[in-house]
Length: 249
Image (cartoon, rainbow, N blue to C red; front, side):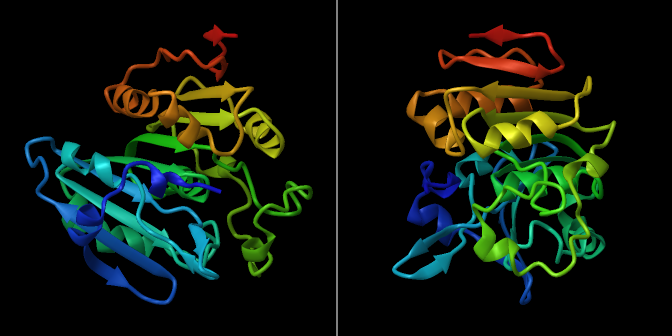
């Protein structure tokens, strides 16, 4: 399965990262001083990664967006716990030198998008972009979700039940869900609200970000969301399920 790391990341971009914190649960890296006049910091949450030669690899995602912000901070849940092992109070302290007096945006893909959303319940995130997020990975909530059982089976305490309790009225959410298979089940459970712009692509699956990139839409969609544009232009059929206003099927 491809992830957002495949979406145009270069070796040079990886080498330009600086690790600002790491322990056995959490890693935070940064690229700084890209566009210091923007007044905005981006939090880019890492997904589960992929297997390479039998070794699980997690790498920062959406590195190409860094030039648009004062700083981009790449946040990795090394335990792949969907945030259940993370201490967001501690994360907030670590981020404070970078986020003080700045607007905060967030972005993620799959598990990274789940983290992007729940982070808004702890941090004053203005805009959050999520591709193929889960509503929950708690078996009590969605017992049929087994795609990441290798990792979710290790979670002892599901302190993060679902994303519903982390939606903030001061955050504007842009959510892009595939409508194929289990992703549709997650999409149907998402809350509906005037600050939640949720777009469902019935013909796409969990690799929605990659498919949008292949069709030439991904970069434009991301930049339009950060610019606050709520109307989606896409040649790929979609429907807007929150607020229920736009349809292109």
